[in-house]
Image 1 (cartoon, rainbow, N blue to C red):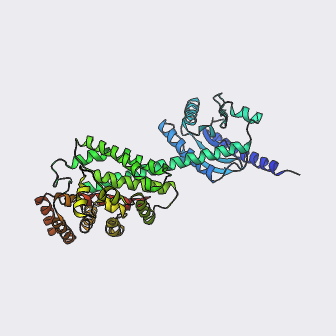
Image 2: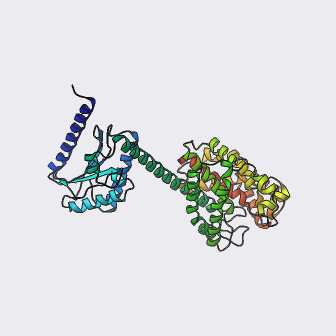
Image 3: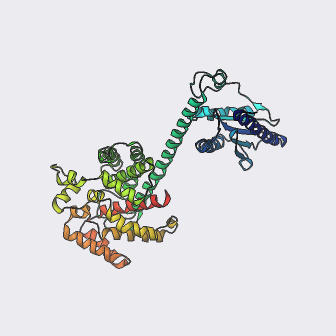
Length: 457
């Protein structure tokens, strides 16, 4: 009577015979071919984790082959999973290629891949013969002896090897997924900032054709400073991925990266403060989304706002009310004079202006392909800015003027929605009184970012 192990072995051998038949079939058509398999000791040879790594390895291999100008018939590829594990087979387009050079190219792929010792890429010529480089792959577990030697001498148990392999694959896929998330969300952040600054014309703000109420910066100042921010955006993400302490202790870590970003901003603009508020808002938000992602929590409005509240708890009391600094920032001076206003107040309360005004509007009006119609998206951005301005106690306006002026701006902003004539009046009013609703512009950029994350991630 056959044991379960011997039955499994028969099934594996049967699967390998079928694979050989597929390779022979390509050879019969005069085609060289390539296979990719994984070195998974023990049984079963595949599961969901291994399969995900296998698919990722195929995608990476394809890019490697294309980058090295290797012509492959991807439309004839075979991807399957059987008792022998996951299997990939694809023929080459050019039958006159130097098959040994291709072998070297694929060996380089294995060497450069972080888990390359788990990956087996074999090259077969038109006679279905295996092309060997004559080198032996090192054992994945110990890295001291060849894999064949360790297997024959049974230096490691299947269990300990599988535990290590599964752990390494899981870590690799999680890190790669985190990296892809950081790239995507950082790109959305930069897109949001560029959308905001490109909205033209704007009341008292820098746009494509005007410096507004600012005499030390212009549109290109914002492009310069925006161009240096993506690396810091990714740093905020990395901090969010790695942070494991109480969220109430996160802000100093976020601020440290923010200070570095501010320094880079000032260098790029030769001293003009173009985006200090944006750096704070996006630093906290990028950290939050990445923290949620790392902890496998949905990037929902509730999760985002609750996390922001924990990070920014008592920030107004700690940084504004109790401030004894004689060299106060604009926000601190405004708080001392007028009370609850500015981005710290908004952050502590998880951005009520954004979620009560801009986000509902964007959800109903701004679609993924809205950017294709420049007039349409310009109108949506302008309306969202006016909605924010009509309710936001903008510390930038208060710093440059007074509460009466702020109330007049809020009134004009509300009346300007869907009224081009009053919008022109608002723009002229801001220039005349030398005021800039920069806080509202920052909230517009953050609103766009939150909307993009919600719809695209």
